[in-house]
Length: 343
Ligand SMILES: [Zn+2]
Ligand SMILES: [Zn+2]
Image (cartoon, rainbow, N blue to C red; front, side, top):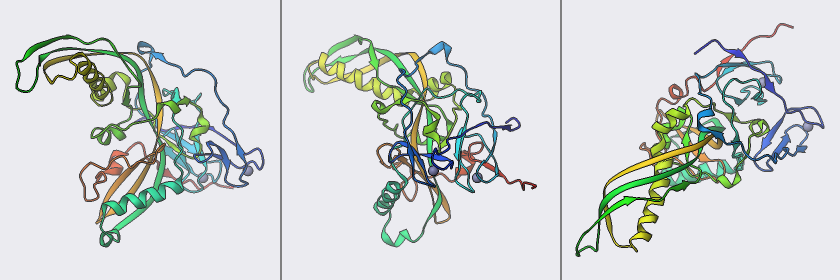
């Protein structure tokens, strides 16, 4: 990783008292923690920009920035494009016009609040652990509201297939052909390595009808990870997750209608997937950390719906075991440098 660059930070001062405002998932506006006043986030009536696939800029190596906190003077090194100061909670949002990194075109703003999250986590943990074991659990107060980047495509796909169909005990008939061209709605591929392991087990569902054009205000007081998986690589690495699932559903619907529900078996199939445009979309995720019997775990909670997402991976909590959490986060979680400021 290259030497850190000083970050230019976008400020969101309160018009009432001048304190820094944060995006509030509760009201979906900017809110001043100091005087309580609210400021609506300007509505962008422009349609969300779709970028032709060959015009999507490549994702380079992660850039490390040095954020100088206006609130307390701390200097914080991070590759994140938005974060909260660990010392004073000030919002540090990279100025989008400053970054050479590819910036998002759209965002799903957080709607689950920190208070709601506490209740969600307590319920989830009680379901997973007997009461005697809860005492073994240590909640790490590092829970973060984090925006995670996804590649978000418009795409078409078809399937060449070969097999047979016919009733269970009846004669088999050959089945061969090419499906119609399916328009795949909102196929997503994860754009950052932080998530690939957990997304691999069961791709999460995001509610794209709430997508809005990206504005940096939505990041104020929250964390945002930059993309570190190039869109070309994303198609190879994670296409089978989001895209394959959608294609399988569309193909199964097609065959069911074609064969009037007669059982069938597909022996060979060849999928052709052609994305036409791609954009970077940020989705909201609460990331909670726990220690249990000396091991660290992370738990993802859907920032729009409050569902606990990574239930299935193995581990004593059934919550997704990440022993090397901070190794995975290397280069993402802030490295902290505290400078004494001479007066
Ligand atoms: Zn204020
Ligand atoms: Zn600070």
